[in-house]
Image 1 (cartoon, each protein chain N blue to C red):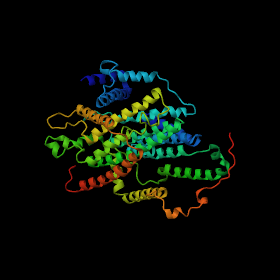
Image 2 (image 1 turned 45 degrees about the horizontal axis):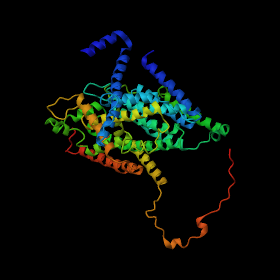
Image 3 (image 1 turned 30 degrees about the vertical axis):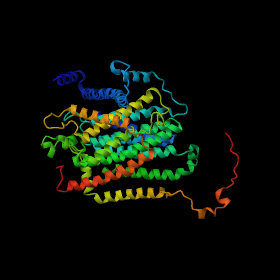
Image 4 (image 1 turned 90 degrees about the vertical axis):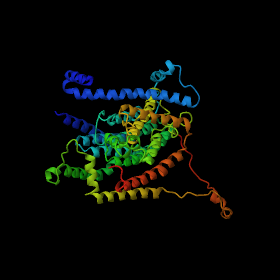
Length: 350
Length: 200
């Protein structure tokens, strides 16, 4: 009701440019909560890691430390952005935007429930793959434009890591779209809502994670490596390894930081949609809804933080070996297995 | 002016400027970045023609993979710009012949409609028609042999690249004593004569 009234009011106000205004409004409605979530994810990470290490975590700014992320943001805004001499200034400043923008642009095609999506396009999975593949430019360009050997080597290292795991991720996605018979994220979710178990009220057993379990594991590990998170965080390694953003300070550094967390939220959302049934309810007697999607995203984000607090860091050659010699052959074999499965009488995806 | 026309001219202007900057930019990395911009804009124009699969694939493959590797190589190279600019005039005749050939080829393709080159019309698709499905169906039915052939050529490229760069790795670092006793002093070191380096 209220939405219709608002729509009518704005239509009268703006006339012919109304569709543009309406779309911009929807974009703001997606981006603003997302940025808030990014800010509070950093807070939540520090709290959870604190509890896991028997510490308290941030608790000084505001009640229970809840204003901490805002204080951090203000601090970074007030700091000077140092631009090194001899660096390529324009590329140096564009690089953080290259890292951050794809993490926001990908949200255009994410479906939140059956009808709630900004752009319902047929090739939305392809769109997401191509938009997220641009993020690697931020890393390469920042490493090169800093005009520093350490930043350059760090940029090369983490770009090579991202490209390697993108291959495994892409192959896992190919298997998902094979069984879904669609590239539309909404259709992929709807496809998971039917099947033997879904008809008997046990929807969570019909989701893609069970029949495609190896791909689910590959995807889950690959997204950790893709976002340069621990235990694959050799891009920066905070305290000991020098990474691609060593020359960045103040807000320019903060944009890289925000990009990392925005990417975490994005890939968690994708995992929920592709493997965990998106907005679908896990059991028959509870209604489907957007809350399930948020619950699944939060669970995967928690796994990110849990892994970070638990595992020691991989060595670089081990990271590369895992990507190229374990995940890619596994994906290729499973691709053939699922292909044969779909052609056999045992096919469960009709 | 219709909105679509406006979008087309907007993208086309960016594309032309980016294309010009690719060949005029002094810094090779900047040139590669302008090429990225050109690909991205071209994909926008293809999107305008409702070729969504081709547009997204262009970004995915060329921007996301090929140009990244390009940048890798260009950044690692130690390029001397003055040396590159030498001999511009002596290469000019050959270069202009090639340029003329390319212009003629492009003219033939672009004027194809006029010259009656194309048998089929450009398909007009509706909104719910899936471009990806259409391309996939054609690739795996009518054009399956050319498609397989192209993939085999790519595979040969991969195998060749691996074969060129693969080095035998020694499994053990133990030294054989029988070879060790035959070593002479001149196998171990060389005395080099080189001019003193001039500081600039």
